Length: 303
Length: 265
Image (cartoon, rainbow over all chains, first blue to last red; front, top):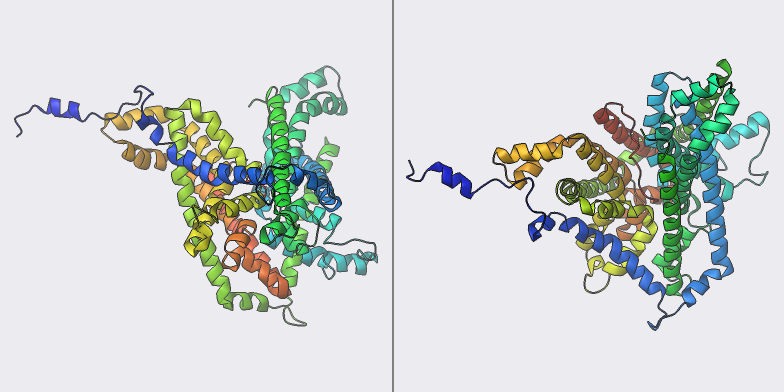
């Protein structure tokens, strides 16, 4: 037996308190690894691209790299990328919304909803190389759907000017992961539509169409637009699917950046950095609008 | 009422068709490696290819390291900003959303430019590129790992658990590893499998950092010269994704999970 009363000894190595003063370095040490990581692997790469975008080959300050973005081939890359992103955001957004609407507000059995959610989780993650393979087997020159259309309907897609490696092909391929993503992000908003609103409008004599036009759609609009913007960004920054589908032979912003990483195809390294910064700028604008719209929608759709 | 559910069924049918057709076509195609008959020849060839196994193994190991690093980074941070530093919450949330504005192709561009030169020289050694690859994947996974962990922490009473553990004499290590981690196992497991699903066939970052060592670039290489094998690879990769996502459903007990979002790849 120790001669010291145990009372004192316990007091000396007291357990840490849950609410000590919030000052002191010990308080910050826990979050240091996270911030250090973010600094090294997110901030530093982005800032380094930003700084290089304002330097010429002799390391002097310049704005010429951004002027270079106005080159016709670069402008056309932006134009194609924007068109594809817009088409897949609106198309995928509409299909995803209608499907999510069907399983939430429409009267479909519960298991359909569960199945749809699982499937959306899988399909929204099924992008890149295997997705490109799947669409080559479907809509490529010897794809199943291409052959079916020819033998059954007598329609030859490729004679009609369709090309899997062009705008429509890429759009249809991107849609495969875009509409499931829409289902994932829009379902919570649809769940937020209250039964009471529909009942109230019906009591006031509104038809289903009036309820949709004057109550449901206005409330959902910020969420729908916000989600479509998320889809836009998702397709704007996509590289793997486009590259493996077209082998790099499509003029997209991400593809040009990729070629620039492999070697200086633009004969001006600064232009590659400006392209990357332009991409971050577009994505930042998209996310800012998304957050603005999400806050608007939260006004009504609090769960 | 009848009319409305007709439309509901119609949209579900169209979506299902959109989903099923490419998969069916791919599967059908993958069975045609032997002329005139349906066979699993393309699959046999893939399974006999040593590069298939070595790239799968490589990507799996990278994925496991990604999971370990992201959990060790995110869990203590999310726990601490809930318990002690709520002021930092906005900043941590902001950082975890950054991958949405920095697409994978731009991220890998920046990583290569920063870490190939002084003072890091990470791309000069294999080990260095693996470190960069894991770091890139941790960034990709950050949005959904943080959200899953933060939602998990919101569901448990962090403060009471911490105080209870402390009054029993636990130190911080014990609290984090033996109280917080077990209580977050659903969040940790689902973000781990989501990370696996994202990382295993990832192409953009892997192709620039490690080339055909990764499973994504391997698939791409097969696609360039072997038609039937590439279809069978697409089916295998789809089954893998399905298996990982199915695991998440299992852990979440069928709850709708909307946090499965990552940035553009």
